[in-house]
Length: 174
Image (tube, rainbow, N blue to C red; front, side):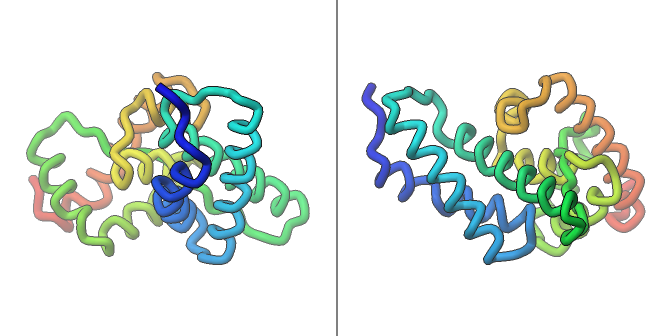
């Protein structure tokens, strides 16, 4: 199987990367800048005739790293508050899971959950977005964020508890 052309890779994944970065940054201009950096790094890597097996998760990993690098620089300069949050939704209670997944399709609830997660551990929002919005597996999230799969699983369990505690009453789930 040959590598796709740079143009076809961009056409296929640009929107995915851009919208992922918008969800993290809440800023179109910053998301656009970070997307450009993401594809520049990806293209340079591919120009060296290196092979990539899973383009989607590979590009999201580059984008995630660009986002983190941007905010590390900003924090050192104390010019931007840090609001990175990550985690995802994986629940054992089928009733709670189906209710939340159904309601998460409403962007208002999705945004409220994401905002709630920002007050917790740094990576919760990213894991949440990668799992719910992009439907990545635990393994793929682990690869994108460069954290162990067990950490992803742990984050998911913690996020489950946060979501249930915060939103169960609102969703009338007993």
